[in-house]
Image (tube, rainbow, N blue to C red; front, side, top):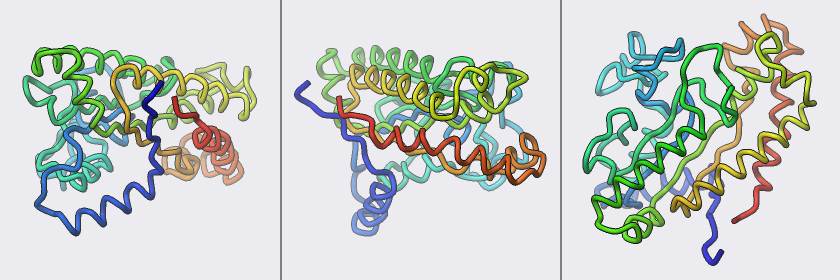
Length: 263
C-alpha cells in the first residue's frame, strides 16, 4: 500500500498537543474529525441502553462533568474528552448511540465499557460492544458520511485526515484471562502466548480500520492494570503477588504493540 498508517507514540503525541494548544488555543481543530474505539476509559454513553452491569448513567458518575451524568465511567472528563479539547474541538465527540445527522462530521465515539479485543471478553457483565462490533459501527458511519459528502471517495479523503484513537485490551485480561471460573483462556495459553493471540487479532482489526479509511492512529498500551482498585480488591483480594502477576502479564502485550508493523 502506498499510504502508511501512522502509529503515533502516545506520550509524544500528547506533549505535542499541549504545546500546540498553548500556541493556538482559538484556532480551528488540528484534524477535521476524531474517532474513538475503546472500553470504559473512553465510553461516553454507548452502554446506557444495553442490558449490562457495565454502565455509568447514574450518580455519582458525572458529578463534575459539564453535561452531568452521561454514561462516562468517571466523575468528570475522560482521557479522550481531554484529547479532543487539546485537538481544538469545541464540543465533545458524540457517542455512536446518539450521533445523528451532521454530528458525525466531527467524529464518533464507539467505546463500550467491558469490551475487548476478543468478542467474549466481559460477557459475564452482560451486553457490551466488542472491538469487532465497534468496527462494524464505523463501517455504518462511513456509509452515512458517504451520503453527507456525496461520494465514497470524498468520504475516504475526509477520513484520511482524521485522528483515530484505539485503546482496548484491559478487559481481555481483567474480564477474561484472569477470571478462570468464567473463561478458559488462562488454561489454554501462557501469558506470552495469550499476548501474541491478542496482538495477532488486534493487528487484523487495525488493518480493517485502515481499509475503512484510517491513516492516523494512536494506539496506547496497557497501564499496570493489576494495580487498579478493581484488580487489587476483587481479583487479587489484596494479594500483592497477584497484582504483580497481572502487571507482568500485560508487558508482552505492550511489547508486541510497539512492534506492530505499518500496513
